[in-house]
Image (cartoon, rainbow, N blue to C red; front, side, top):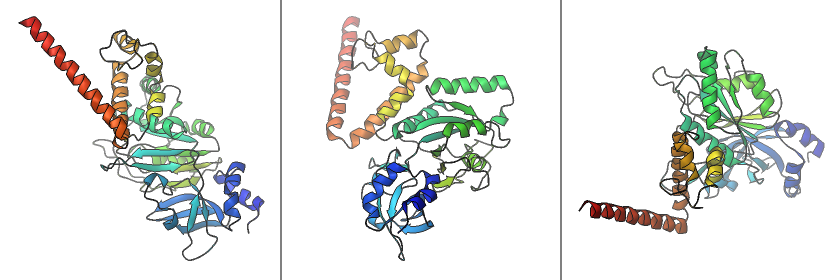
Length: 364
């Protein structure tokens, strides 16, 4: 049996603390070992334990619910030996990154667990897609982690005035979120990023070609991830990272590098969307009607802010789009909500028809 002090010595660099130790007590009495999942691949996973990294089978923790499968970042109870050895359970997660899958079954896909900071990597080699940044931030806020936006490849924007304008655009899109510029090639800005993420668990998010693997190598201090050049045509890269990997950082803490995400579908992320668009949520409290859709209703404070130029129209459109998408995803698994949405559609359709008939009456 591994002593408690040995467990802390071996696993503390990966985030083990007193709370995790308390949660593991019942499994310790069964002779199981604690460990953190550093990689998952086709029903098996690599787990760092007090005795080192072991390969374990996840057959005993593979439920039908895709949100309950073992993922990178999980703390698990693993058998001390055996061929194969098995993961017997995972500890309750503190945070979890979930996106909707591309399937038609409205399922969520868990990307990483027990994360403290989410670094959203955005390449300055491309024109800024603020809508995509908002999507990633909604995903990050909903998970329970603290997001940070990192504008990578800053060396490609040598003009400081242009760079400052780009940062300002993203800051407007990301209220309450630190926005950094980094050049992993030259090491610029890395010290600020390291000081922000501290010694916790950090996940790297972003689309292919955003420079995540280069950033991961710079943070780790060695070439642990393969790097491929992005295409000149659109700045997009191929999936350099194909699995989620948990890597220890020399400054303390660990880093989870994820594959580039071409699709960033929301999954029950209303709270996250509200956090991204906090200024709209605050304005909505001043609307005359509590269920104001911010369209044509009288006394709409949100529309007034758009008309006066205080709130960019693009922000409102993006907010509506993400809220509709999230509502639709939730409705697919909630029959009552689905019925309410259909009733709302019928009501709006009837109102539109009545308005058209009224106009025809005036013209006749």
